[in-house]
Length: 402
View 1 (spheres, rainbow, N blue to C red):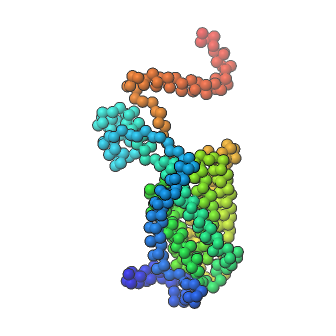
View 2 (cartoon, rainbow, N blue to C red):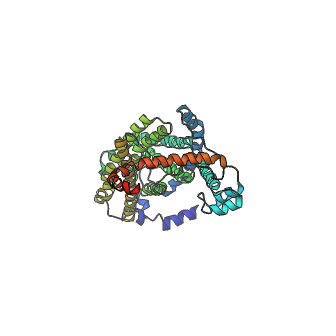
View 3 (cartoon, rainbow, N blue to C red):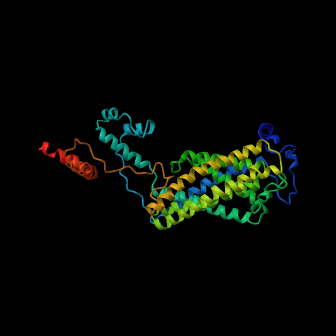
């Protein structure tokens, strides 16, 4: 371990990269009674915390979230299970979930192409997460974000840099870190590491890539800001993010429980808090402090540019999500309700189970014919407007047609 630390100190944790010019790691010593100066080795404590979060989540979802979902009446859709077929199962797992070789599969299995497509539709629906699964995930995040926000606010509200951003930089980098802020950092880092490790098994959403980028940027931001003792401004960044997330997760919980009125109310609150904190407080208070105000206390260096680059990546993601949220607010204002989460689950949309069966089945042909006739009647009705607009030209040609 000593040789590894020596290599890291020589190539990565170089003082000239991460500290202002003229400052070394040996200069960052303070009175132990005032607190301690962050060291890169402190980040290793986040690894057992990450594993602890994953274990706690498994227990929490089974012991707390699942019973709560039943209490709130969360219902899972009954799905038709695909009939066991080894050849189709192998193709589904190793090739594609959307078959492009339907005719070849039909010959290999002795089934019609329509039955092959139906099998894959049922198989895809089997793998889609249930409402209970999504409810448990939202509940776990809601509990963490709520507790994290309460702990962060209570530890910061009495600090001078909570009210005055210039206090973030006075005496930098020789700023002692209180135990409360140290554990606030370690818990946030451990939680986001657990989210990144579990991202492949969690519910996939349309912004899956953006979520991965967000988790990675957040982890780098927390780790780097701690090592370079950007702890004061870092705690403000974490608090800003936690302030709206628990509203979103609680709205998701109530959405899966079909408590529409309360869900819509919480979503509106979330939208207001998100837009204010991420598009006003974050750029004009936090980013402005790190980009502009900090230069009154030290000269720019590599760590300064690296830290601000990560903050700007987060701000770009904030703008992307704000666009999705404003679309939802627009739908809510004009439709009277939130029609669909713009960040909805990529794999959660059920495919229609009532597809027409194979045309070769004699008993189902009459049902298919009735369904087709019904659809043609609907199509004809939808064309009434076009018929009316061209009525004069039709009437003029009617005698000739007769």
